[in-house]
Image (cartoon, rainbow, N blue to C red; front, side, top):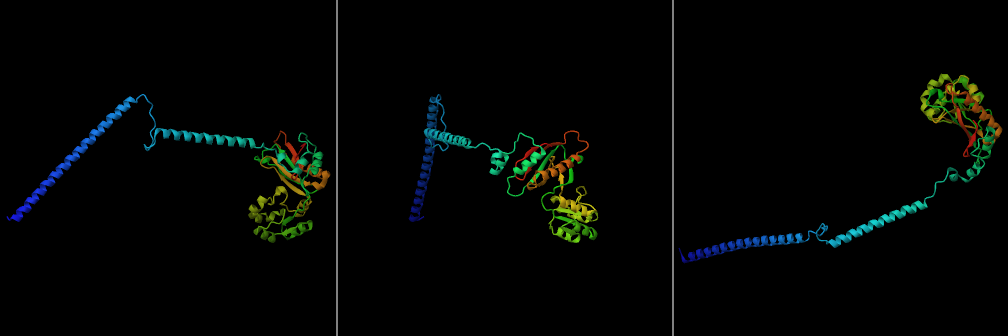
Length: 335
C-alpha cells in the first residue's frame, strides 16, 4: 500500500468517527429536549391543579369558542344582544298598538252603500211589514237608477229542493207583460213554421236554425220546438241548457200548438223555479208600469206559486216575501 492510499484511508476513518460522534450527540440532545418538555408539562399540570383547588368555591365562567375572548367581552356581548332584543320587542308592541288605535270600526252595509241608495233606504221602515200594494208603490219610489228598473219578487219557501216533489217549478203569464221585448225562435216544419210566423215569432225554421246552433249563434230569448224535432235538438243540450233555453214540456216550450206558445211568450209568460236555498227570484215588470199593473203581475205569480204547493207539506209554505227594484232597497211584504 502506498503512502497516498494510507493517507486517504486515515482520512476516511477520521470522517467516519466524526459523523458517528455527531449522530450520537444529536440523539442525546433530542432525548434531553424530550425529557425537559415532559418535566415542563408535568410542572404546568401541577400548577393548574393547585389553582383549581384554590378556586373551587368560585362560580365557573363561560369560555369563548375561540379561546381568544375574555369573560368581560362575553358579558358585554350578552348585554348588547339582550338590549337589542328588548328594543325589537318594544318596537313591535308599539307598532301593534298603533295599528289597533288607527283601525276603523267596520261599517254597516247601508253605510257602505251609495248616496242615492241611502236616501232611498230612508223611505223604508225595516221594522214594518207592508201590504203587497204598499210595497209595490214604495218600490217604484225607491228606485235609485236613471233607467227603467225591473221590480223583483223574492219569495222564500219552506221546501227542500232536493226532494223531487218539493222542487217547485212553473210557468205563469203576466197580465201586464214583462216590459221588455222578447225574441222568440220556433223550431218547426213547414206547416207549423207558417203558423208560428203569423203569431209573431222572430225566427222560424228547422235546418236554418240548426245551422245557427252549430255555429253557437244564439240570438233569441225563448226557443219553442215541436215534439217531432226534439230528438235532433238533444245534441245541443249542453249549449242551450246552461242558458235556460232548452225547450221543456213543463215550461210549455215543447208543444204541437206553436201559435199559442208564441202568443203567450210574446204576451209576457215567465218561468220560475226554486233555487238550492228554497227561494224564488222573479222579475214581474218595470218601475214605469206603476203600482196597479205591478200588483196584477205580482198576484198572478203568487197565485201560481201557491197552486204549486206540495201535497205532503203541512207546515207554513211561504216563509217570507220581499220586493225590491233593481239596485234598490228591499221591502218586507206580507206573503
